[in-house]
Image (tube, rainbow, N blue to C red; front, side, top):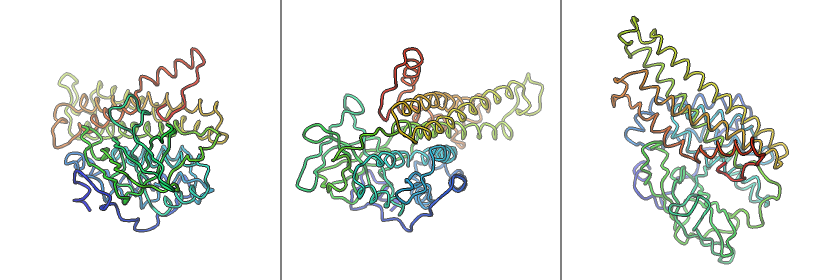
Length: 413
């Protein structure tokens, strides 16, 4: 299995085996948070070496899935616990603080489960929510390279009786390498947007391990190619249209991204504290014996702590606003949620980059030695915060405050 997943191309014939066992159903926020802490503790020690050698977290993802955490947002009506966004956000932050690559891998899984709520066909919904409760994982194959913008999909869905034939190539396919099902998106002959949930073992599906980003190195966010992939209509959502009522989709997709950034910041800050306490030297003019007594170092630690705490509070508040919006899912509620998440994402972006930089500023030159691999914090922060440009968050917030303009409704805000 390890050799297969580390090869450049992974054909469908080498798809993952089905889940080994049904994961436990985590029914309360406390159970989910405890499971997240336990899993995070189990992966933290190996994070630096996995990044250094680009070792894909195959065993770790199996344990993550087995924990029950991948099913926490399956709705109550479909057998899940339907835990709130506040819990999903905190779980993501906790895991990402230990290893943000692993924290990012289920992001599209969670987002797609949220989108699945809008599907009209109840049988289809029960089938796929049931698969998640059994331990199956969703990946993603959504974004395409070289198109005009993120929603300019060239992938085609061609009707073929009670099936569709899908052709196209995707990139940034985080989670596909570890997935049992790969959701994708494209257009039919009339230009309508359709989404398919494709089993990994389907002939014509090839997953490429060609992600070469300098950060988030073990997310395996590479390519997926669909070459005349035949998919039954039962695996295509949106055929009869999605629910007319709007759903909170964009804010949930975005807050998971913000939680990953907050986790990156927390991980960098934890390593800063450890290095300053145990290895760093005080500046010669401080008159102190230890770096942890250096007054300017203490001041900067306090500054970073305030920034991190502010970002975490904004993140928690945005999650609460999302949960309020989920009660009725009105256009006004979704707009409030989008704005709250945009504000949080500005702060989590800034603190992730700041904390990663401050690690070296306060720990000193010795912290740059390759044996520590602390540069992974900055690399992870710089790469992951490029998800959905934060400069547009400022614009959306400012336009609303100044002109009363509601934020756009899509998954990138």
